Image (cartoon, rainbow, N blue to C red; front, side, top):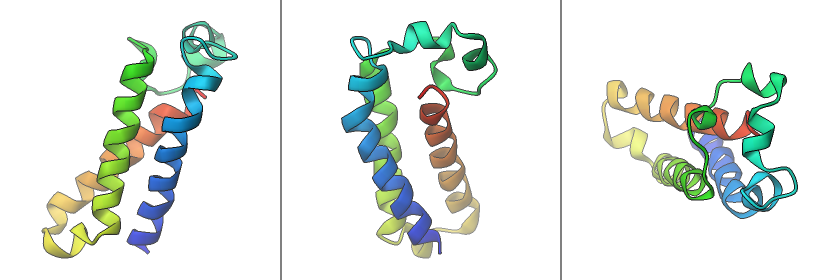
Length: 102
């Protein structure tokens, strides 16, 4: 189950790396900075509230993809649960940050 969820996160992060800059990037259809000023966007939890750049978004997405790939490869079987659970929480929070600006 955990590998399946991590695989879904991996696909989602990789698609964010490829698609997000064209949609909500600095030169996208709806620039993220303008979107984040909207009242709806202000109520959403995201890392990008303080600062947005395409480079930061790609960094967050690649970090999430790497952590997800480690879980898919079986990281959870080799580390104690007190280390593994925070990895899943970090992946979830990174994904939540990307989704809530898009």
